[in-house]
View 1 (tube, rainbow, N blue to C red):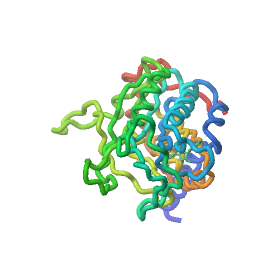
View 2 (view 1 turned 180 degrees about the horizontal axis):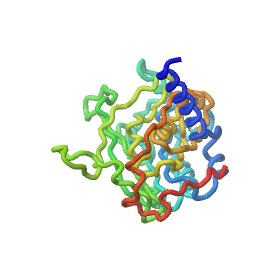
View 3 (view 1 turned 135 degrees about the vertical axis):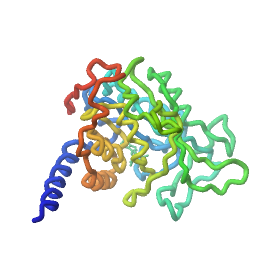
Length: 317
Ligand SMILES: C[S@@+](CC[C@H](N)C(=O)[O-])C[C@H]1O[C@@H](n2cnc3c(N)ncnc32)[C@H](O)[C@@H]1O
């Protein structure tokens, strides 16, 4: 065996083991499984819950298929109340969600060639007080409800999608963005601003990251549903957790947060209801490559507000 292939072998063994031990997947309903996790365990939570009336994941009682939008918001507020309990007191929640339109009286939706997951066997009624064609500000409804429930709402980041899906609409602009809300459990919290600074226009120095992030959607050949682009998750993990920190995704899907956790040297717990998706996540995690070099940007204390910046609690599972 050549020196190069020996090195590859050693690296593969190290990577596979690292990914295996760094990410734990819990199979089940988030409404039950979060209760098994210990208080104040995670540095941050990065997640994208099912959107209201947008996807049919094909099981009874699924979050997102509620007839009333109020019930959807209530279910998610209850889930995120549990997330708040398991976050460390200096923890943050990064919540990706988009707005939707009323169905205009349609009760189902066909799958489309590019996206089989768009098929819907149900479409919720137009919510009370709204009209057909109304934009439902469901993302903001959820953000406000979480704020009322005790979260600190700190940032509304616009995820701009340069490669957004075209729409056949003639009387409004095409939707090319979703939201990424950043919320915290306490007034002051862990936030490594330096880890995600961006270059200034002249490239000579770096400035605080801005609130509009232009990131293409990333295809995932195995999954038929919306997956996070890794580039959307990465800044959340780099600024929301230290190297070797512990992150949570309670709607794990195909495991993108786990993959980025491995790639950035964090550890992750994911909860997912669908066994098929867990298999996809495991497959992706097997190919995830941990960083070879220590994350120098994250080794020196700078502006973190936590006194315990470098402690990593046990999983507590
Ligand atoms: C928008 S997808 C998340 C996709 C994920 N961010 C990724 O990159 O693959 C939402 C996920 O939540 C899962 N889910 C829906 N209801 C759930 C529940 N009650 N408990 C656990 N997972 C659930 C769905 O099966 C789906 O995989």
